[in-house]
Image (tube, rainbow, N blue to C red):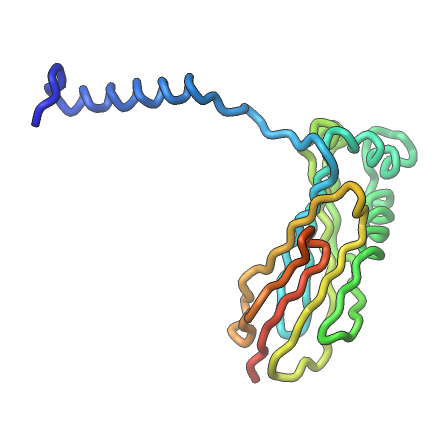
Length: 192
């Protein structure tokens, strides 16, 4: 079947371009996505036979960024120094409860990164905090990691997920979260 007025393949290209432009005009997409409300806390859990690693990204919304910057930038220099950032990150780590098989772990601060204050006030800058806890002499078999995040629960939205383990000895068997994802449980088995 031939469509009237369509003679060549290049005609189809023009029809596709015009259709795409028409759709874009009908449903314009926002140029940028700014977080407006609250604090988004996204945590990735990485598991190895000898340690558990948490990579956290905290993205303040435009509504709370000025208050958070005021807490972070104690010298009011317009920049968050390494010392100011680490002090804040230690406060975040202090609000985490991390355990394996009901045995409390002691997560240690490994790395921090703080964006420019202008990015945070624009709703685009994310604070990055990496912590690790050592797992000593983990026996082969079934285990469960539990994470409870009590940092700023009144203003936060939480997301938690596990990365696929690098070690072939570890097999994730389940993930459970409460309705807000403040409490997270990761079940796994460790092969000999």
